[in-house]
Image (cartoon, rainbow, N blue to C red; front, side):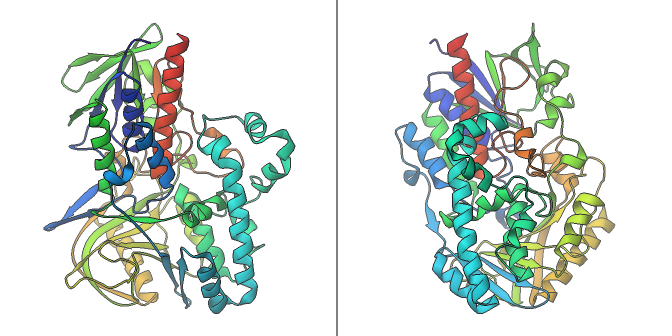
Length: 495
């Protein structure tokens, strides 16, 4: 097969993975990125004289990246230093109590036994077994494969394994399923939070998302130098395969002739011809016409009611007292449902939000540095950043709610400097998303099938990123890029 000219729009995880595979297959690949460097949502935010991770903070599913490097004849460990976490996260509640989850399952069970009693410890072990079963059923046929429809998924799993498919529980809500394992509502909150890893509500998401718990059980790593080093490692791998990059390059439109992609036009008028294009941005940008009228049929935009959560984040330097932070700490209110009613029902920041904190200078010893430490503080918010400009008053109200929650859980902060990002800011960073950080919300039994697959509705245009199949998160977005590259290569072979 002769080499083709392929353009990749966006240097997030999906775009980088697609570019690496396509270049490895012998194509001429150029990545066009509107920002000054790679990473996409995996961004670093300057705060005073330091910088910190302002996006994803958890590295899981290491096998995705191992295989990406190994297929290129290289090793991930030569490009990236990963530090296995023994404490997965620390959790605390306004109504009292704190609990650590550990990489060691038995250690977590013992902690739960002391926290909530023997019955819930037994429930936890049963929950782990169930989540592992769901993950193993779906890993190959769904997560790491081209998007199926429901009948194709059953066929891939095997008609002789209908019981395993039933155990994935798509018709039961996550919150409802958790009641079978935990009596303590605080534990239902803790494990229900895994639905928010996909930007969804545990009261509407299918119990299938329990598999996220097993993903963490398989390993969580901290990244030496911060999460931006993951993007830097993929950039280095891409360059080694012959990929070229152009930064500060805003694509004004994607052009098509006779129903097939023919190239792009940059802001300023420069035209670049291409045999195919991989789009690594929010899919709604295509359907809303932000990339020109020729590619609007590529996919339908995601309307506000179907969008995943956004967030309000503070990247801050601070000194802390009271509750000792772990690298990952989650603080819960006593009314979990009210939070999701606010975000998804009333489309407003929650009055009593769950707060996630990444203490980026702490390791498993949980000791603070001898200087103001770097904290990413996050609360969930609606993805209405294309409709609402979060001004000073809204930001102040959100900060008051977040800081009250932290104080009620025993954490005191003495802030030095901070940088806030709202849904409006995230929408500016990721156009047409409304600030949704995870694409479409996984609400209802069919939600996972409603994300578009790698092949768009326009010939020669392929989709990668967290708003496409198989979904959001660092490893899933990388898989989406690999799936886009594989589909593109197959289509070229058949042409």
